[in-house]
Image 1: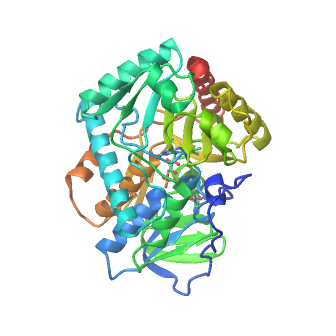
Image 2: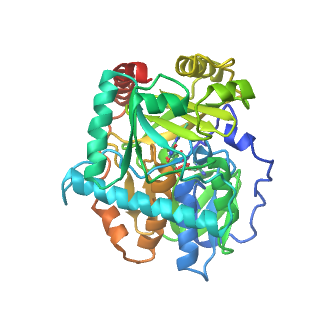
Length: 433
Ligand SMILES: Cc1cc2nc3c(=O)[nH]c(=O)nc-3n(C[C@H](O)[C@H](O)[C@H](O)COP(=O)(O)OP(=O)(O)OC[C@H]3O[C@@H](n4cnc5c(N)ncnc54)[C@H](O)[C@@H]3O)c2cc1C
């Protein structure tokens, strides 16, 4: 069960690099005994810690983070807070529509919760619910997908706005996309600023310990949580470190790690900005899983694309790939330089479903977050804390009704299968990539 695997990235998160320096909280606490320990300070872990602190105000909670706040995947993403459901599927309790509606309710509650926290704590993270976030198509197959998705979203009561080729060309400043639609419940954020703000405004009975890696979790409750810097004891432990949970011995047969990559351009000059469409901020997401995401963020561009199985790719290779994709979409720009390029780890399961629940008495986990982690991860963390404290709610019932991840065979079959799937999906995406 001993782990050697702490997340290590070759490049800083560009979002975090745009923010002022901060001192990670790494003073080793005197107290070694906690009511609850949370492993991982991403959206899931902080969601769990906040809710535990609210439900157990007399108890002390410790959050242990291997990197620093602002350098994990929660600050390496594209900053879309979405409510659209990942991989709806029929389960033992209902149809695929029922599954989708439960997932949407959870994500909307996550978005509402984040909005409230941002407002109440005045978190300066460019929270924006006005900027459009468009599912856009480039190819014939993409256009068919746009129509199919839009019909599904309307069936699930997600209000959407349609965008024609002319409209997209006018406000994005490129004729690359032929049509799209915009789900109207969403937000765009600066994700490093959001996760920092959430960590800085936790209830006072939560302690965060950064640059400290949990290496083993032993015992049957109380649990011994052994880190590279010393040991703690806790009555309850919450595993919220996504695919890295495998290195602690959890769900190794259900999770795979996939890296995806993002980059920010330098600030564009007025000439380049004027060539771009009429809107100050927007986001475009692909309708194929191996497609490319773009955002206009004040004077910069964000581009996210590419994926790799288990290992991070070389940053310079990714830079040249992302530069080509950026140039394809915006050929009239004077420069396609990228200032920050970085990768981030996500967790995939074979059927796209999360693990959520109790691994054994007192040991809880929410794992398997590929995308949508800002809203869904936050809410899963919150619901996990509620479950552990014996609370009941309709949202917790929704979450407990969802399917679990399937078994994945060991290497070499899992690697062969995952790479073949990614290659096939890349081929299907074609120019959407
Ligand atoms: C480039 C990119 C773009 C994305 N775009 C979006 C988007 O626009 N919208 C969206 O919702 N999602 C997006 N995602 C996915 C999103 O980032 C994840 O869903 C989200 O980060 C999952 O949150 P989490 O808290 O479950 O896990 P994480 O954010 O991965 O948090 C887990 C934390 O655990 C820490 N950790 C790991 N192992 C240990 C250990 N042994 N001990 C202590 N700490 C440990 C890690 O350092 C990490 O900080 C994107 C991801 C990437 C990489």
